[in-house]
Amino acid sequence: MKKINFNILERLNKHDLNLINYFQSDITKYKLLILIFKNYYEDDFKTIEEIIDLLPKEISSRAHKLNCITNATLKNYLIKESLNSDLRKKYLKPSQKLIEEFEEYMSIIG
Image 1 (spheres, rainbow, N blue to C red):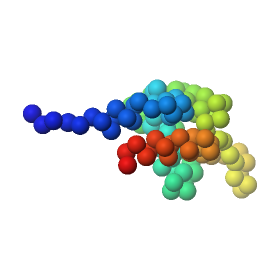
Image 2: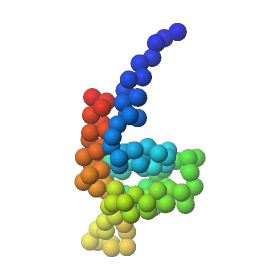
Image 3: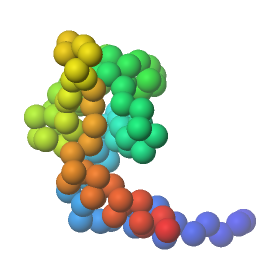
Image 4: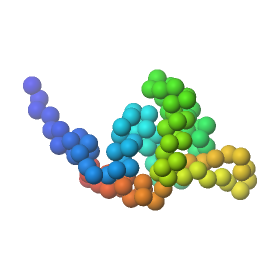
């Protein structure tokens, strides 16, 4: 049987990054985190509705996805912003603290 090295996985789960821990507590939150940062680094901000649609339908209900987004914004982990062209549409971006923790989290991988 092939020996598998779990060191990276263990380090990704054992850290003191509080905001990352919040997103790791639920698969919907974790996929939300990954999607937010993918959009952030690609400079492609999505509306809340677009993000809900991009999260896999199999993992949770629309209501749960919206609750995850709402809770993360209430905690100031995610920031809702409007573009000048349409103030009704809300876009999500990570807070500065979340960006710092995510970059530290990603440094675990190398």
